[in-house]
Amino acid sequence: VYFLFQVQSGNSVGFHTSMMFVMYIVLLMIIPLALVGSLKYRFSRTTWRGIHMKYTGTVKSMYKVILLGFLYTVLTFGIYSIWLMIDIRKEITKNIKLGTLEFSFEGRGSKLFGISFFGYLLSIITLGIYSFQWMANMHNFYINGMRARIEDERGSFKGTTTGLGFFKLLIGNFFIVLLTLGLGAPYALVRSLKYYTSSVELSGNINFDEIKQVEINESDATGEGFLDAID
Image (cartoon, rainbow, N blue to C red; front, side, top):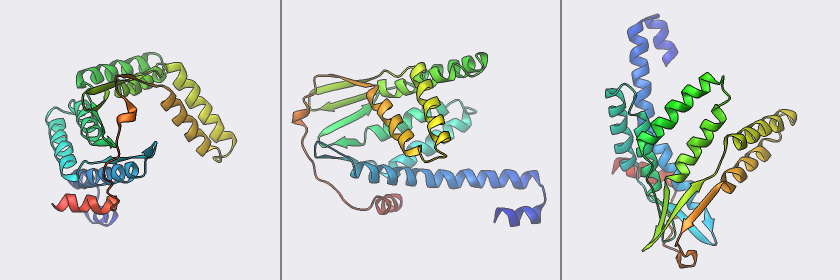
């Protein structure tokens, strides 16, 4: 469709601008639906000690977060995009449940802005060398902002990834995939997941034996997403 309209309109700047606007609108409509659907599906298939996880968020609430955040991002010439990432993270995290265990995210946009700004600047100055530490700082930020609670018990997470650790992980994965002509990609993925999970610490007074199973909804995630969207 894009090609046919391009042939008819030539290389009009107005046409390209209009098409880009339409594409952004379409993406804004699709992303919340796809995101919520995938989260519901993945968490409904995840268990820990026989206790099922679930995602209780709706497409409607995700639309509110993303559309409002997109509007603020446009009005602030892109600056609010950092805070939009925080808003999306908070919306997702507060709707994740492991039985009766609930989660939340308390990261601040100002801190993420600082990490992103100085990470980008130092990566340029060091010709990309600092980028590994930047990735570690970003990962640790998202982990450190996580909280868990069950009734009056509280727990907080801590990320311990390092720039050197990310360097070894990514370079190692690159050569694994390269030397095996792509066959080692699953091994590289498992290797990455092991590194991420081993670099997370949980502290607090949560008694995991008190986590109880709750009602499980086995309905299709995609179908739920469409129903939420038209509700």
